[in-house]
Length: 414
Image 1 (cartoon, rainbow, N blue to C red):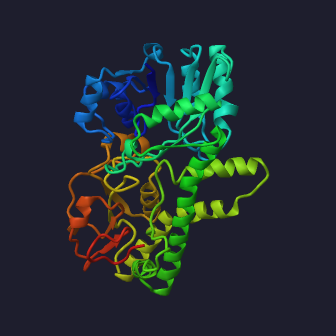
Image 2 (cartoon, rainbow, N blue to C red; image 1 turned 45 degrees about the horizontal axis):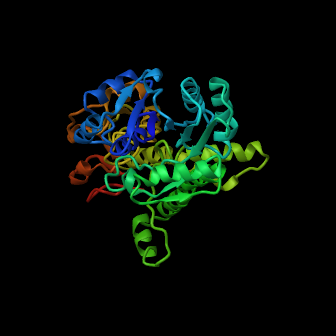
């Protein structure tokens, strides 16, 4: 019976560990001891799993540990660590490199290492495999093997959970590819798709979010054009969507750990090979500029209402990168806050989903719980959390800007 170790217990790794624990012996490894402690106490702060589901995993004898030696009984290692970008928008492979180094210390003959982290084509075999070989002193495709099965988790989505999303699989040999495919097929009710190679699977993953990023950039640019024309963008999209093959998307901020990051992995590799991906980079430029655009729109609306800008009190509702989710990674709301502060505004931020300590540590922002709309000159509803949809905010004496268009009345939206 295969014994599986999930390396990285975040938004991707933990649901995967829970799913596998129903049929296999599972180890969960994470370098964050605080994360291990909360899971062993039956709590998932990411809220991807309910307390009941965490306890189910514990009842299935899953072992959560920050000590790599505690997981050496596994024969299959699945690495689900983040693959971020640095300040220059270049791939930061540090987490995947360090995870590979850790696994190499306990890798045994005939073990399989499967990567789920989003990377550019070639990372598994050209970056990770040499690390595994060096640390384990084993030979790739002779005494150990690799696979790649990209994650497709949608944080905060309780409908499209890990077992209900079709899974791409691949392996370093035909035999290993089938074994990897069979392994995932045993828990993924939606089925699997066996790619022809690891590089094909890597490429398929990285273009999923790149395609979405480009499509959203088009809608954002259309919103910029229509707002200049004085036309309601939402009305335009509703009309256009009556055509059967129109892709209906909404304008907005593009943050998070996937859509706003993954395209840079592909563009990095393309430019390294001498090709400049103008369309993809242009889309990134448009989407990254939306926070500045929102701040400028709010300031202009304040000026029109004869509201003072310097020392104006502004309330921002929502900081997470998407609705009904505590994930604050790469949220573009912080850029709105920064822009408004540059104008001299005093900005307060609230988000009932986000973790206060994490927000303070990551962005230096102290979230507030209570607020009185009457005391603010401008209010920005930045995230479409469910509770915000019920708000009724008067915009007679203040500016109300609704980024996602969820309020009944506002002074503007994208």
